Length: 361
Image (cartoon, helix red, strand yellow):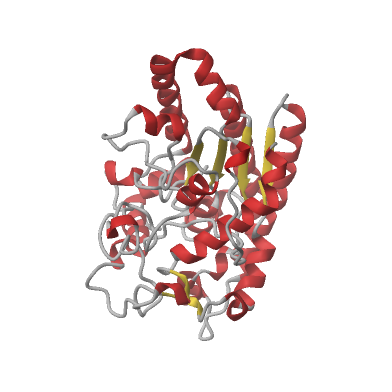
């Protein structure tokens, strides 16, 4: 039986900073600034982390090239993509700002706080063991930072305006992928304690408590992102998909079990919390369709990442010395073996918003 220290090293080498992947249907971007959300506030994992991990002691970082090569100014900022990620596009599509800063950035000004920040941490999850293995910010850590953020707002603009900002802003949460794929399927610990039904129920219970905490602090409009078919990311195809590099169905099945429970939980909470607009954002079925029919969406490669040739490159293994970094990332669904490209993210955020914006008002 491997010990915890050995397991941490193994997982670090496999760099499994998992994410949610959304529907990537290409559509023209609409300006939603008329909805007048004062801020976008994000919690979760690498899909929404705009650089918080740059400021903590973890190897789960993306603050080096070629990450960020297509970002504003061509700078690697800690975003796990070649450019902007959903946090940024959400802020832009609502007419708030071009990119969403990480809360731990020491150079933040009050205007940054007033218009939204990201508390997300790549590699994070609801299960405390997930964040222990990755040495990143836990769900509770993110809530603690959120409390600190509220205190800063109150000190600068007062309690009344702070309450208004929290009630009218739009919140997004992306967590669960690392729990399922890393902590459950790549670690022996949780599988020895729980079956899939038990483990997914535990995660949804923690998710429900997280949502209730956000509501207690004043959040009212909250979008909760489902898990995608995470067994289909290039890394999983390579490690467990056989010679044909197929999707790993056991992982996808667990994701679907989790999604069903999460959806029911979000609906129940939305009915029980006064004035809450809690919205379950499903992307599993659309992404499955997208992967199978990628060419009609304008992509050439759906099962390999732009960065690297072994389909295991992500995190520190996706670097300027990596073999085979592609020239044109727009042809790829995935930037590295786990995370989508900026183009994919741009299209998916537009589609998610178009399908669900009416549920928040």
